[in-house]
Length: 120
Ligand SMILES: [Zn+2]
Image (cartoon, rainbow, N blue to C red):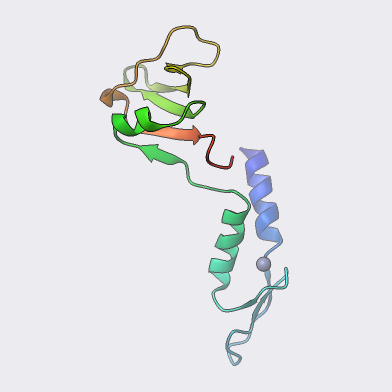
């Protein structure tokens, strides 16, 4: 977590306010050279451009089945108070596990950690 925290702090540190005047429209300037209005949105855009995303949550078994092979999800196991990580192959498997993991509606919502189509 602290590595991610440091990475995000670095992104934000590269986009700090360098100039602003209430008397000049679109005068806001960022340390990176950006200039305009909507400084907060500019900073959000830089965070998104750096690859930061809120994890996708799936709430229907059909959506889980539709994920491409090699996708990785976090499956909550409510009866055990935890969660397991599973990767899709011909079925869902825990890393290093030989037995398929059955995913049912009782495991929802599932958090998508990675799909081959999305940037990490
Ligand atoms: Zn900037």
